[in-house]
Length: 243
Image 1 (spheres, rainbow, N blue to C red):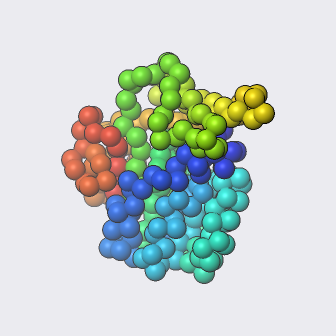
Image 2: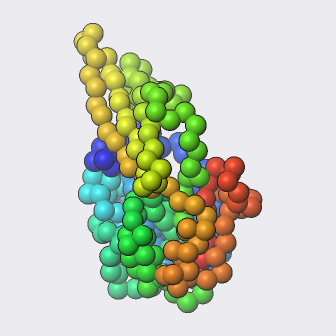
């Protein structure tokens, strides 16, 4: 998994900020404490701490948490951010939260119905009455699959003599998109290649609504982008809020 290469992941998404205003407004409106599920390398977290609320961030990847801890220490945010290694399907924390978020496709790692239900039931158990839960995932787009491609904004990630190639394929029966990454770097007139992969399960709107309702959530709303425009299949994201 690419999460084992936290340095590469962090370089890929260091400039991604599309979701900042959405989640910051959510935290501002509902308050803390805040639970972030799938904190990764703390990309979003370091922005959300500006609200002043304490954030507990969990992730199953030790490598990602190590990178997140480096950032938290460097920015001297230890009093506001607490990191824990935990599985989103079965974590147990000794408190409930006003705001729980699962950003940036984290729920795409619930590959089965059983995993969906376990994850959302665990989330619901940790949500305060009157609190809010929000998640966002990509809206599946099957264009440009099954071919090697270059993503322009990911070039020169490892320096001026590096290129990142991506190959994506889909299994529509299991609803799994697999992304394979090839990072080529020229050193001493030789090409060095590092590889990583990512498996993500995509969801459809009513499938996700069933899962949320089954876990006990209500007042479920869907959006197609971070400006809260109405969801439809042509929108870039599948975003949900629930109580």
